[in-house]
Structures are given as structure tokens and as C-alpha cells.
Image (cartoon, rainbow, N blue to C red):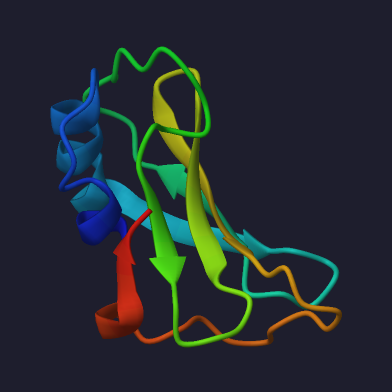
Length: 103
């Protein structure tokens, strides 16, 4: 999912791509949704990202209404990956990556 999100070109994207292999999941959202917190190992390149969330989102059109996957960065490092559902119930799992399209 990270690779698909970071396939877009924007300022800092290349450095974020280089961080992916040094990134691990360190937590999950307390509400039960699939949102995850990330940690990047020391030594990974710092990304010059102008805003967070990054200007690349994925849309899950397999559900109605469509849901979004959003990537947050903090201080130049990958911070969290959020699945935003616009339905009344929270999804418990990530959508299939193949179902996600650039938003």
C-alpha cells in the first residue's frame, strides 16, 4: 500500500520511497479501524515534504460510499497510514490493494 501511495510524484516522495524498507508498524488505532502507526529506522533519508497528509491518496471504490487511504508524515518521516471510511461502521481490515485507485 505504501509503495502504491508513493508511486505519485511530489516533493519528498523519493526519500519516502527510500524509507519504506526501513519502516515497521508500531501501533494501531484504538477505535479498531485498520489505521496503523509507523516508525522509520535511524539512518533513513529525511524527506522534504511540504504537507501532511501527503498529496497522494488511494480510493477504495469496492465499497459505497468509496473510502480513502491517506498517508501522514511527521518531521520528514512516515508516521501513519489511515483508512478513512465514510460509512456508519468502522472497517476492521484493509481493502485489497488491487481495489485501490489513485484519488
